[in-house]
Every structure is written in C-alpha cells, then in structure tokens.
Length: 345
Ligand SMILES: NC(=O)c1ccc[n+]([C@@H]2O[C@H](COP(=O)([O-])OP(=O)(O)OC[C@H]3O[C@@H](n4cnc5c(N)ncnc54)[C@H](O)[C@@H]3O)[C@@H](O)[C@H]2O)c1
Image (cartoon, rainbow, N blue to C red; front, side, top):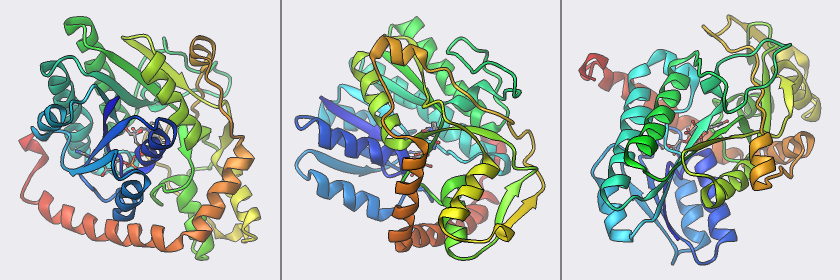
C-alpha cells in the first residue's frame, strides 16, 4: 500500500506511522504535516530514521493543492487523516482555525481523493462528537445522535458528516473511526495527562476544571493505532466504528494517581473555573469493532499510565522544547489574527 498520513508529526499520527512502518514492511508512507504548535521537529526526525527508504515527509497544509500533487507523485491508494486542531480550550478562543483545518481541510482531502481515482479515506474522529452523558446513561453507540458541545467537537462532527455524504453521493471509499481519550508518549503537554505529569515533575500547580469529577474513557495510543489499522483494511465502507478500551476514570482520580506515583503532594491541585459547556462524561460502546473486526485492546489503564509517566520522566527535554515552541507560536498567531479576522472565512 502507498499511504498518505496527515498530521503524522502529532501525537496519535506519529504512533500510527510508527505502527505502519514496524508492522507492514512493504508499505510506503508519506506524512503531510503543517508543523503547527502541536508538532515536534524531533518527531519528524524520529520517523525518518525508522525506515528512510519507505517514508517521506512533506511540510504543508491539508487544505492546499499539495494534497493532489502528493497523491499523483506517490501513487497514493489510502489516506488516513489525523491532521486537526485538537484542543477544546483553543477552539473556544479561536473557532475559525478549527473550521479551517477540521472542516475545510477535510473537504479538500475528500475532493482530491475523489478526483484522482477514489483513494480510500479513513477519517480519524472522536467520541466528543456525541456530546455528554449523565452518570446513569448507557454508553454511546455508532447510532447515537451527534450533539457536540465545543467548536472542536462540532468541527469534527461536521467532517464526519461531509465524509459520509461523499460515500452516499459519490460512492467514495470512506470509513470513520471515533475513539475515546488517548494517552501515551509524545502527547502535547496541554492535554490532561501530560499536563499533570509535566506540572507535577516541575512542582507546579495543577489546574483542575470545576469539581474535577468529569469522567473520560481512556485508551492507550497503541491500541487506538491497531484499531485504525484494522478498520483501514477490514472496515465496511460508509460505516463508523467506535474505539474504546472501556476504562472510565474521573479526572480527579487520575490526577491523584499520578501524584501518588510521582510522590508529589495533593496540595499541587488547584481548582479553577469550569470550562464553558464542559462535557461531564464520555463512554463509548465498542462492541461493533470487537465483534465484526475482532479488535481487542492490549494495554490496561495502570500499565499504560506507568509507561506514559516513565516516558515523560525520561524525555523532559522533548516536552519542554515543544512547550516553549508553542508559547512562541501562540504569540505569533495572536499577532497574525489581528490582520486575518475570522470573518474572512
Ligand atoms: N488525542 C485524543 O485523545 C483523540 C481522541 C480521539 C480522536 N482524536 C483525533 O485524532 C487526531 C489526532 O489527534 P492528536 O491528539 O494526535 O492531535 P495533535 O494536536 O497532537 O496533532 C495534530 C497534528 O496535525 C497537524 N496539523 C494541524 N493542522 C494541520 C493542517 N492544516 N495541515 C496539515 N497538518 C496539520 C499538526 O501539526 C499536528 O502534527 C485528531 O483528528 C483528533 O481529533 C484525538
């Protein structure tokens, strides 16, 4: 197979490329990434060194004509789209950039996939498109309504619907995965787990939204990648597959566990005003992918957490560098925003 992986220098995309190169020795991979604040230059080099003859990197935007050039030049037969603006808090500050990448960018990928010979398209989506559950509610199935709460989840839901419409209208080869919260090495330290680990290691306070009792359904990133691989090969076209390890844990419980493992005091926890429209609980029913494709997760929550914490301890230069780069990019972006108002969209 010749694959175009987008957003491959981000957290999950980089693990997926690593998975492909290690498990499919005859596959070739092109990674298209815009190298936003969330992408680490070292990840680019790390992937390059894994299989130099089967991997290439293109710096660019999924919303550009570069997509067509890559498909033609590399004879691409499959696109797996990880490229996204992915942080809910940032989507509240700047919804326009989320629509630009997560909706307009996906429309552009779909267009080129269709125009150049019906390239198979795997859209990597999220459980957040379903909205929030009450504690007593049953978990979301693939038939649950889409009730996104944030500009991030709304933009992802929009991309899912666009992709499904291309299956119905143009008979494009589309499959969609919706996964729960991922954790593991190489995640940007603005997301809950790496933020808590990084702040705890530095003895900094750990901001916790509201009462901290929000529940998330956690999956180790390698299990997510294995599931995408199976959906890409065996998934039924035009279908959605939920991916979950069924590991629901309240935020406060995870934070306390991390502090305990790192032998840091609970006094680092600082409760802050809750995020607007903060989803209370996510839980996914993943019976479909388990029963139809035989997928099973391999990593339990405790084991995954321990591996993740050790990675952050051993790679402090990595996340500190990424955090500093993001700080710089944030101010650059704010400066640019003055001249490119959202209304232009
Ligand atoms: N992190 C999770 O827990 C989770 C759970 C379910 C689904 N997802 C989905 O998985 C995908 C990857 O998430 P992640 O956590 O790895 O995100 P991330 O923020 O770590 O990485 C996103 C990558 O996309 C790149 N990118 C952004 N805009 C781009 C553009 N216009 N063109 C090309 N590249 C661009 C960035 O440079 C970065 O490398 C996203 O689509 C997200 O919605 C994430």
